[in-house]
Length: 365
Image (tube, one colour):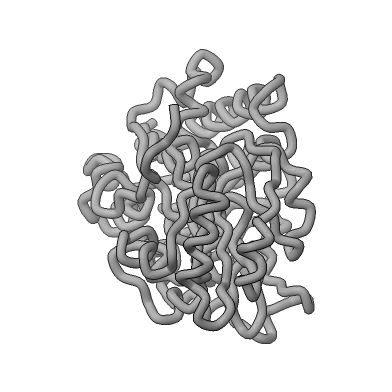
């Protein structure tokens, strides 16, 4: 059955942007019950790429996650790690924090937000993470971070986690041990992050045993966390996005490229930056040539329809392209500026339910 309309983020309802304000300040939320937000100690565990629909299809293999309370919520647009993790941390949509996707123009070049690099190399000397992303991180509260040590000191970590104390781990199981240690030392709010499921889905997709086994490990990890937490601690588990299998990369049609100055975004949410004055012509060409594969929107339409939130700053708006190709078919759109994109099987970034819906689960041990 074809998808008629994109699933837009429910910013005023069940959305991942409501998690951090609820857990930090007790702001009422449709995703976090009051008694969870009121717990003396709280651990927020983000499992990168744990989509709600993928979880629903594998309930038999996830007994721990399936026993937790909670339900689905929408992530942000685009449904991609850089934008979504920053929205979880800041509690605002991408239109306000300004990290509007995986790759976007900043400082005179298209920047990879996760690596904070441009084609010329490290982009931090040109674009400061704290200047580009000005919203207070981790809800402006007193949180400690437990995550892979490889992310310590990265530009993206600085942008979305700020100056919070960061406790790097070398092995996934150490996520549990480090979290318990910090709670024993008196920390009351822990943000923990694990990205193994995302890597497996990108490389292997959802067929075969790779994804199922990694999901089973994530379920074990949550169970180990529950067993390790002190009595009375609240555990909240969520994700930044889901994924779909979309191994095919489609070339952007030549008639569109002739009207395009450059590309940004990512395969399932590809921005075309029009040559001067050619936006309307480019949008028409994209609709004619790719409308059977993607939702075609101009920058103005995306802003007017609230894809990036009810408010979009001038800086955030300047990082968008002119015409978006947002795939609803299981494909991605090419960009020679992206490395290794054609080697992936699982993808995300678009506004299909499988990519947009994530769980927000909770328990008090």
